[in-house]
Amino acid sequence: MIKLRDLLEAYDPAEAFHKKVSKMTDNNQHSEAAVELAFYLDDRDAATKLNQIKKDHLKNGSISREDQKKRDDMVDKLLKKAKKELSEKDYKLINSSF
Image (tube, rainbow, N blue to C red; front, side):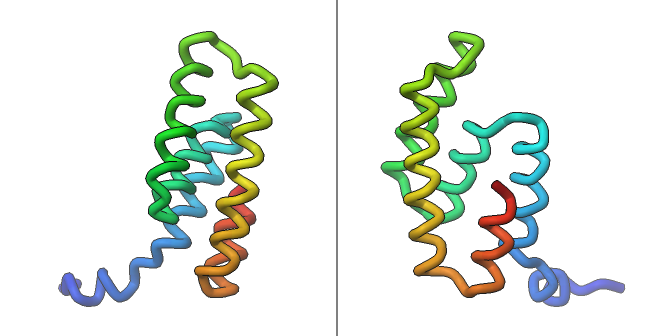
């Protein structure tokens, strides 16, 4: 029988993030993936801004060039933050999701 403690020790948040976000980016859900990155790094300000970009994207049926640039710039900043805060192994997994 599997114990909860064993499951918790086996759970790897970076690996779970990688699986989820890789699927998103494969399905061209880049705005949603950006929101997930902000949540993963606990950056509420970025999450709020990226969520608004995502909502506008869904409402309009496409993303404006201006919003795409904002989103991509924010993702770059978040990935730099991840590089500083995460282990090298976790950072590589997170970065490869995009």
